[in-house]
Amino acid sequence: MVEENDFDVVVVGAGFAGLYALHKFRDDLHMNVRVFETGDGVGGTWFWNRYPGARCDSESYYYCYSFSPELAQEWEWSGRYPEQPEIERYLNHVTDRFDLRRDIQLSTRVTAATFDDATNRWTVRTDRGDAVTARFLVTAVGCLSAPSVPDIPGLDDFAGDVYFTATWPREPVDLTGKRVGLIGTGSSGIQATPPIAAQAAQLTVFQRTPNFSLPARHRAFLSEDQAEIKADYDEIFDLTRQSFAGFPFHPVDRKTMSVPEEEREEILDGLWEEGGFKFLYGGFIDLLRDAEANEIASEYIRTKIRETVKDPETAELLCPKGYPYGAKRPPIDTDYYETFNRDNVSLVDINDDPIEVITPTGLRTTTAEYEFDVLVFATGFDAMTGSLLRMDIRGTDGIPLSEAWSDGPRTYLGLQVAGFPNLFTITGPGSPSVLMNMPVAIEQHVDWIAGCLEYLRDEGWTRIEATEDAQDAWAEHVTELGEASLYVRANSWYVGANIPGKPRVIMPYTGGQPMYRERCDAVRDAGYDGFALGGAAAGG
Ligand code: N01
Image (cartoon, rainbow, N blue to C red; front, side):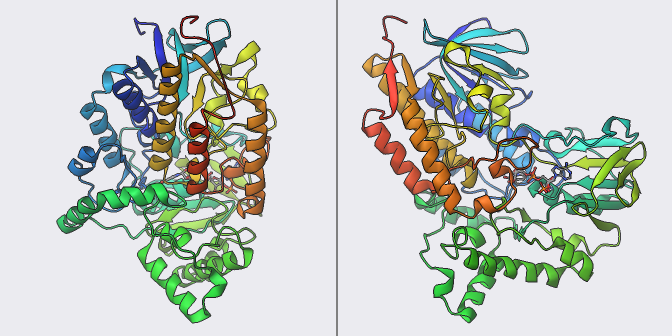
């Protein structure tokens, strides 16, 4: 339990967002900050997701903090796409380098937060019995941190071992000689498939929806790579802050149909060979807007799948159809499709033949029964809203966030919710967040919030709240942009479709970073337009 119980800011979560928020608010603004973190270590996503094969699918040298040039110069990434332990080590290094640990209370879940209209302060409660107050509450809970466990009957009856990719144990899991059933083929399942197949006696992958996965083309960095990156860091970080999705790719304005077919193939071949997200963001500007353009890229990937997977029936099952490439978050892999050429790996389509029940010895689909020693669930998250709604957050008049968001999340700029004064949501719904390289989105939000807190302090305000009008207009803008994009054409977690009963709403802002940043800056420059400022420093 903490001894001190009143803070300027309480931050929830000690991942990429929470760590930077603590540094910024404490060391730049000289505020009194407390961070609560559920895990017994820092790292957030990179603390929890320890499944075999877990590695970042943005490249290391720009999937990192840019706020400290010294940090960027001193840290050495081992290669293009670091594995989970290396990113966890990086975040621990940052924690120690900036002396953050002393203000982080680990192994503590925030269970409730209530706003007091009379004092303009939040009371924050934890599962360890803490009850602290803070002027501001800043959530840094991550967009993909509330695991979703499918409601399949019989799960408790399974006699073997059950693992979830999102909460994979710290101690090594030995799958040697085991018969493993893996459910889910999103980024986590796709990354976990090759290393599990390499160890297990037999792996059966249960696929509901095939995904468009791109080769990562991971490689170790040579010392020349390190030197080049470090020499170019200013430009790299500038590009990440200017580009559509936070990647340091030079902007393209080339439309797919404007390029003759042969040249187009060459461009796609080059992007495919280069690997990673450049295929989506670095080749053509219209893949997420124009269905015809998207179909060309989609068919290109299907052709690659068919070329890679030797059994034509399996290849066809792995080919995504009926939704555009990129409308579901595209995974990046190492040898995913190749793994289906192994003798010990098989694929089961549970779209046509759904899992009906988990049995003590395995599982049963409508038409077949399977026996396993181990079940692995890679079934995703209650994305973007889940971790916020799993806390009992109550705003003015005691209104719960779950009630305010009963028809889906509504925010102003993804940063605040009307009726919840002094609450800021880092990478909240309504901001580009998950459609961006996350550290870039996080730094932009934390910097904006810090600027706002400084302004309030300088001007003597103790309360800030998004107005209903500003929130309505923003929500409409987010929906309009989303509806005009291809994102709404897939049943993805972007629209809440993976959680039964969740309102179908396009949650991230799809207009891209430049437009979003410009809007945030304009709001700030106009004295926090769309926010009601109130309270008085003297009045508490
Ligand atoms: O989760 P997902 P994830 N019965 O939701 C299936 C980030 N990430 O953990 O598509 C059967 O993508 C579900 O099927 P369907 C990244 O942003 C990043 O893999 O809903 N199947 C799907 O196949 C990513 O997008 C990295 O039809 C069920 C799978 O489970 C996000 O996290 C690595 C089911 C879930 O896929 C989430 O990825 C990993 C059911 N009842 C993740 N319920 C890196 O940067 C769900 N499924 C490295």
